[in-house]
Image 1 (tube, one colour):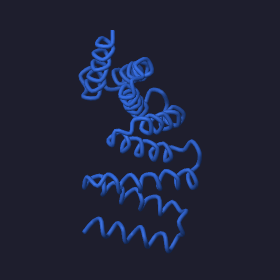
Image 2 (cartoon, rainbow, N blue to C red):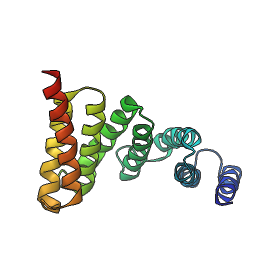
Image 3 (tube, helix red, strand yellow):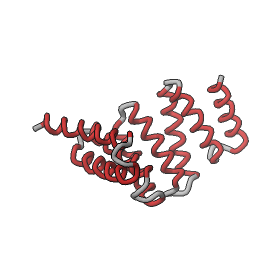
Length: 168
């Protein structure tokens, strides 16, 4: 029922505002999130792709909103094991958030963690290590050593160490 209402909202916004409007972008994201919540990932991916293309047209380059779009798209790609696309999206979001939120922000730390994990999945150990160590430093400084976020990064670094040790 909620999905049907969101689909109707998207159709209505397209008719009222045209296909290239921020209100359409908002509706695309809401519907994509609903699909993700219902494990309808293929449908969510189509919407996230459309949202990313629309965001590039209607949002200011380098805006925080564009970084959110890139991060959402990357997160879904990661979940679908499309690690190249995930790494690309996380890198785009990181570049924007470095400028908008700063290098000492939880957003920047999280996206670097996610980028590092995607790079690890791609077998790019050195690049993954750089991102994960940077993410760890940010998270420790901002959240403390006992935070769940620090523990998450440490777990991923442990996987990296295990993979590089096994490769030796």
